Each structure stands twice: as structure tokens, then as C-alpha cells.
Amino acid sequence: MEVPAAGREPGSALSAAVAEQGRLWHVVLSVAGRTTPLAELRSGLEQLAHDHPFLLTARYAADHAEVRYWEQARDLHDAAAIALRLWGEHRASAQLPAWEIVGLEVVDRSTYHKRLSEGYGDAAAVLGGVHPY
Image 1 (spheres, rainbow, N blue to C red):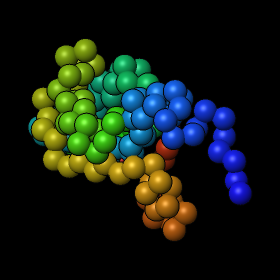
Image 2 (cartoon, rainbow, N blue to C red):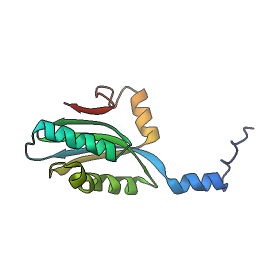
Image 3 (cartoon, helix red, strand yellow):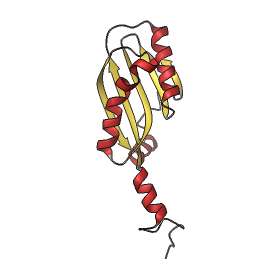
Image 4 (cartoon, rainbow, N blue to C red):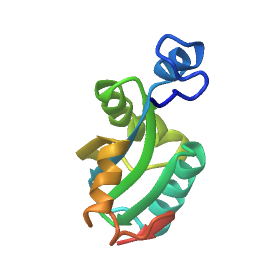
């Protein structure tokens, strides 16, 4: 019989704290809009990465961008709601263009890692930092 790790027993204080903090969700947010000078866009995405420390990578072109990051939330609904606010909430502080969200994918941590182990996912994307497509 396996003994649970200390503090991980159902009902323990640590177990309750972990549940309260939420789970990790992998988010891919796609935005698009009017053509923006690449230097301005890159600067804005770099500021977003500074403002949102869980940002993994951002890829961009003059009229669209994709941002990948981890979000901690109670459930999928909360993670998606936070993701849908990300661009708008950081638009002024990071000087991001007034683009609209055109795509959103939110998966839990185990699904993300399962995809990677099966050869799917963002292996082709350059992870870390802000890069052009």
C-alpha cells in the first residue's frame, strides 16, 4: 500500500491550499488586426512578457500574433475568462495594437504534456521570448 506524501492527504491543509490556488492551464491566445510596424509590435509583446511573467513565447507578424503562456486558475472557465481579458487589460500599459482576439485554446497541464509526448504541440515553435513567425 502506497502512503500519500505528507500534507497531500484528502482534507489536509496543503491539499485545500492547492485546490484553492487552482491548476495550471496552458493558453494559446491568437490576436489579429490592422498592420502594425513590427518594431512597435515586438516592443509591446516584450512589455507584455515583462508584465505577465508566465509568458512562454510570443510569435508575431505585422497583422497577427500568438501568445503562449501558463495560467493558474480554479477551472477551465476561469482560465479562459482570464485569457480573454489579457490583451485588453495590457493594451495600454504594453502599448499593444487594438487587435481583436481571433482564437483561444486552453488545455490543462496533463493534456499539454500528453500532446508533447505524442509528438503534437508546439515543438516547431521557438519557445521562450518574442519572435517573428
